Length: 382
Image (cartoon, rainbow, N blue to C red; front, side, top):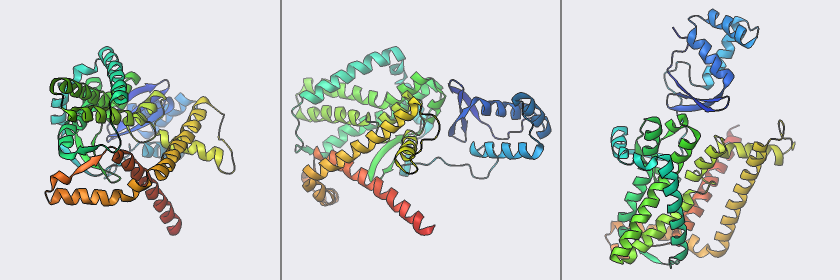
């Protein structure tokens, strides 16, 4: 009989590190914590566990110290019995499931063959090259006016396939599916899928799962290229450009996009943004002291964090300098778009390519405003 009452899943992450899944939450643990769990799993009483713990770790804890240590460790891992399991923080609000696990799993099973590693890497790099050439060569301008409803009708399936790609890759490598839903990220509607089970996969499998959404949309882009050559319809030029640009935006590792999770797995650094901010604070804020030895990982985190702020700062600066009119008029533009939709004046529902950069500008501004308001509230209440 185990001293741990909750069920959990344990799998190797990298050398001397393991992934433990409890109540759909995932934690990285070290070898010594894994050994502690093994001791608690294989002993029937706290006294037996204490004896084996002291023998295994060559320690001399008493019953009270051992109980406090276990309580502290198991609390961090959500392994203590509780009425309400700890929920993972979600950056998406107003979540609505549109495909449950079973349906998403059935649909994604038709695409699993695309994620054979050899075929995946070969086709992914070919598709990326095609996307680069297409985006560079297509005669597209920022003020090009686009028919909203036709674009949405063609683009909606590609976003859905993006999430199906993530689910298909996760299902292929772990045998576990995920629901697909919609929600609001800051103020923008988004699709989402939870593929946290891929933490149990190998590093290459996690990387493929991170790229799976982009990969599926690259196939959609190839389909639009074929349709353009068949029909010569200019709408497909716009779809080629939109899917290509969107995929490159997704590869940027400075927002919580596919590129962020990709870089996180490539460097084996969970919580990449928060860890880079911690290193920046240690170095740039008083008392200007970096905890521990200077390691290559900390150097990477410093430059990643610094580059992140430089990129965001430059983007905001150049948007304000060169696109101020569009930014100032954007709220009224969105209001008019919504009004025209509800009054059925569809001929007036037109968008432009420069709305993409303006939307990203507002996304960044709202994110930082939200953080500053929270900090201000915490200071007032403390």
